[in-house]
Image (cartoon, rainbow, N blue to C red):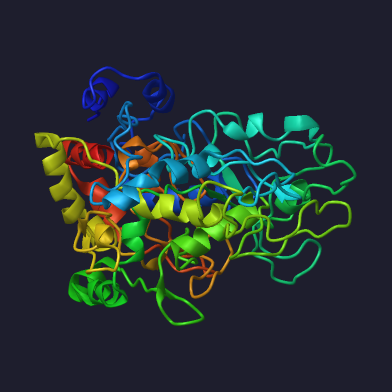
Length: 490
């Protein structure tokens, strides 16, 4: 029994150009489940090892056990995301243009004002919005990779790494170990340098050797996550995350779910941002991204990552709070803090109106057991910023990290998140997302579900999602498709 593409794509009506790209050639998955459970566990690793290969931008050819559902593709634009919280005060709304301008700012190397930072010496892009772009500013990777308009800008002599493709996701690169050693690394290695740029005369540094790192299985790739609703996620109480973790233990044990928080090594609070929940706050996230992804030093991260002589062009930190009346028309925090406010105040994505199919799909989402990691909602507590408090948010995440098996393991531990553990990704907005799993390995949401299945191999335990994926594959074709339609409605 099969579903045709017409049945799946009728959910959104007319197929958009993007939808057509990402659903073309999707396979019917109807082979014997018992035999293929073993195939998917081994093929998942062969299809995309933990590191070093470019992400696929086409539906996967990996055979999966029993699913006949078809991804209807991302919901067409306009975006149901990218707006600010409607609960902002009048004073907060007054600075929306300022913080939006900052998030969209294109950074050059040379500082030209007290709150305008300098690019490089190492960077992966020159603007927050270039990576956080789809379906609206603040989101994730767009269909056309913007890095191709950045890497040789102003004469830069960069070579595009092979894992970055014109129609693939924007990827960050990390090394498991320092090159040529067994010393742990784990850091993001920016893709490009300012060498050769007309505004960086005299700087001569090389890009990281990604070719060797990939050949040595030392390269970890992660795609750019969306930032919608992150200000609300930030204020969820630690105790509420723990209480949710401890709820429904009998069912979770039957499903094999044993997630746990990634606690901060400083104050013990629960971190909740990043693919391994390795970042605690939107301020640390914003400041870190300025420093690492654009090379812009700031008051949170005031030191250049690369201090090679001839490549540091500005006093540090390059972006600071302006305390000098008359230089600008207002006293205001630096670039990283402005972007922090932008992220904090972005509203969650708005789901599509429910249908009979998506309502049944939500029920099947619970029946499969998905909801016991992808927790439907939390309520934010009262806060000193009223716009963020007393709001029920449907993020579909428990904000814990879980064992995902060797098929998804990237070999990199961060804090209390092991090399095969990842944070439960919030699903709000997934209906308009183009790339899935931590490394963007597929653009097919059905394949993304199947990628959650992975048997243990002696190095890593089995994925905590195995039983839920098995339950999904055992459903009727209609229930499978309705569950997928529900996800694409979020």
